[in-house]
Structure formats: structure tokens, C-alpha cells
Image (cartoon, rainbow, N blue to C red; front, side):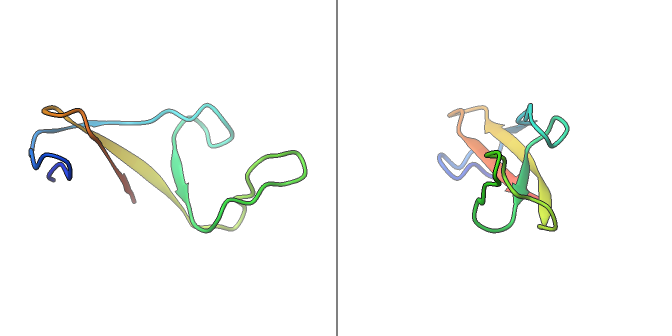
Length: 67
């Protein structure tokens, strides 16, 4: 992998915690955000992918990948 900002190849893996309904990790959800009656995101029966995060050790840019 290569940083899309500076082109460096020394990307450090990490993750983005999500302290909500998805059990402690961030996920990508297909489609536009739709909120339910109580203000929570509607995600039932939608494609979901775990988000991987990598930080460039040279410029600190974050690269996010779903899948």
C-alpha cells in the first residue's frame, strides 16, 4: 500500500473504535444514511464491511479501506 498524500509506503495499521450499536468497531454501510424514528441509523439488511485504517508514518495521513 502507498499513501495517497505523499506516496510513502510505511503505512501503520490501526482501527477506529465505534462506541455505538455495532459492537466496538467501525463499519461501512451501503447506501445513503437514513435515520429511524429514534434518530438511529437504519442499517438492517444493508451490505456492511469492516473498515481498516492505516496511518502514514511520514505525513500522518489516514487511509481507510472497506472490506
